[in-house]
Image (cartoon, rainbow, N blue to C red; front, side, top):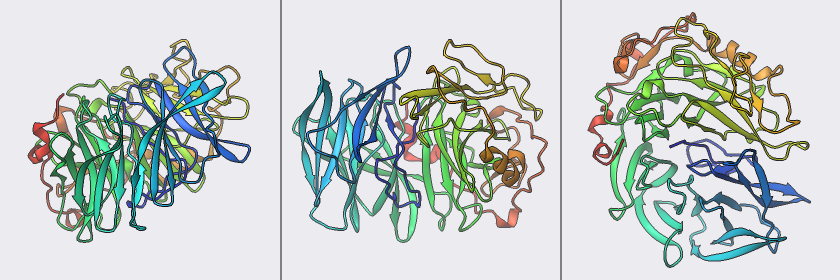
Length: 455
């Protein structure tokens, strides 16, 4: 499965401190379709992108009335687009589809939220693409709704005490959903079994006083990307672990970039039983804007790339053979996908690229241009030019290299994790002193989720 970021059309805070922006899009798990709201004459218009053809193309889906603030869209695998329209505490859902010059609409029903403090938004696209879910967060409890794919309109599938945020799918069946639940002033990741009446089990609890969230997951390899302030109380850091592993989660020093926000948004699929070899795409936000980072758990460096002009920031997907697709829209190219091939796992173990990075052009070839971005649409903007973002990242992150620290494990003890021997890069970023580390976390193998995950 390719994990992807979803950014609703009107920004909202998910409770974890991350605010989504107006330029994003939602992408189906099979990478066949995307959907977003695009500005048109002052009012946003739903738009569906077809991604599984020789070239991407967009189809506008204007409704019978202008869309209001708070509207969200999400594609289904059959090409229809789910639209969520909130109006005065009532959340209505429709399926949109092209009908010649117009747009067809199928009403699915509505969810009533009489409590003014309840907020509802769509969860990331579910595996399979025939169902869609939403999260309704109230002052003291959270409800998971299936808003598309049911027999009789929106269906309540789970109720959880506490306020939840996030939303990461952990399996290919769309059954196991990871949420970040806030109770007692602390946030811990839990897993909800949607086929067992919303049964809730703890998933990630690194330390008693830490906030632990799940950012991304890949069912093929079991790779899990998390955020926790256990290594540095009060300062969240990005770490990684493996579902079913006896090793604790680890916090690579190269992902610690002062002055920058690091957000993983896509994991390379199809890497069965080799989580350390999965390529991970990172959204990097700093004082000079946003750009793209490429990283593997087996490597101790981040490769920085300029984002294509008009990038739908924070969205993208990996193919199994290691090509990253980045959707973008500009005045000249309203529907485009820039592609970049990730360096091989062997490249960079000695601190160099090894000459293996290169752009992936529209014909599937490698440009051999050191990881520059190429575009699939004719006349697309040149994304491989100069960019302030990567230069700022190199200065802030010590060239993106350094050591890796496991929570509660002395610095440097992670060499050889998962049977590999990842080589450190030339950077000399300081590692955490042992006294600053949190107690050893519960290995992910002990999480109740492990018995449900299929690989």
